[in-house]
Image (cartoon, rainbow, N blue to C red; front, side, top):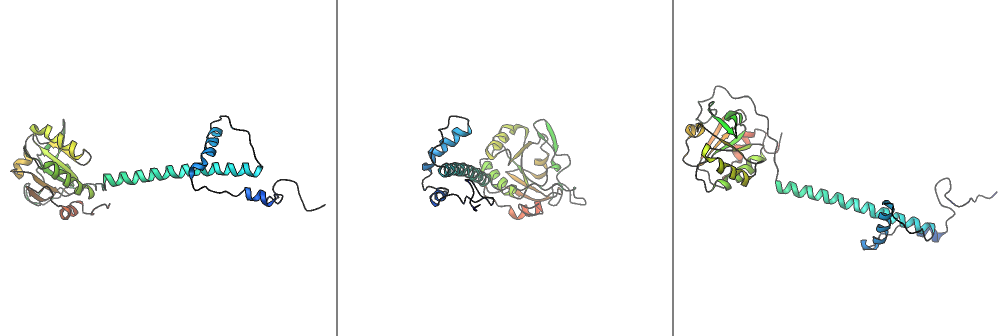
Length: 255
């Protein structure tokens, strides 16, 4: 008996019975123009959807090569889809900008100066309102608390600048006004973005009475509740990075 065998692959998987011209037909050639695969793509879609598919034609090698081309189209579509998702995510992250996670607030400091002084705590009686929900001012830490005057033409730019800087350090930005400033605070939140700016009213004006308010005032509150600085009438492009390092303690974009 000779060593030859019938049509089909040998035990090791090789098609020893194929002629050289048949082997050439198994080679997958990717076209330079993807439009050349349009017919194969339509046939593949019809096959996947259970629609009518033309009767097989050509040699076995040609049909197998055509099927491989259809698989190549499927893989190409999948790769392009993944690339689109990756690019969209990257662009979205670039537009929003880096936002660090806020560090957990530590316990309130003790044996510090009286409220109203640098190094002291916010006054304990300062209870702010978020709608109808009361919240102790001392619980807002670490934070840059912005006391907003009734008339503030530069507050939009200032709050946008401060919130971007503070957000990169995981520090909250909080705007506080009187109960008659509800509409003003809502407009600032909408302009700057509610995720970047929280707004509260101070029904008793305790913070304004404690720190004074001739214009815009920034209260830089560390995570232990200590007011490390009071910045009065800041410029719209003021830079706070040096102080923000101390507020967050861990530095920007770190946990």
